[in-house]
Image: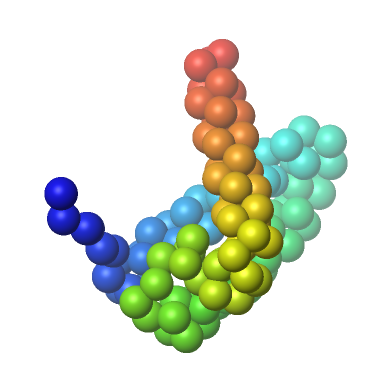
Amino acid sequence: MGTDQIFPRQFMIIVILYAIGTAILVIPASVAAEVKQDAWMPQMVSIAMGVVLIWLYIFISKKFPQCSIFEINEKVFGKWLGKFITLGLALLHSFFAHKFFFMWAIL
């Protein structure tokens, strides 16, 4: 079985869509229930945070053009800490995916 690779441009598009979608839809929805009419404030903060996150992902992907996020973690943080951070990222994404799908299943 051959190894498949995501090209940097594809990675950038995936990250941009994921970060903007999360910044606009998921994060402010939980905060808007509490703040009512001031819901635009967390919206702007989350969009700004999403833009910073996109910039960070693009910077890292340009610095390590042929590596996956797992390989980058191992190169930057070392073998064991890199694997631990990768595991944390996988668990975090699993948590958000579970929360997202559970939220839509209720509706």
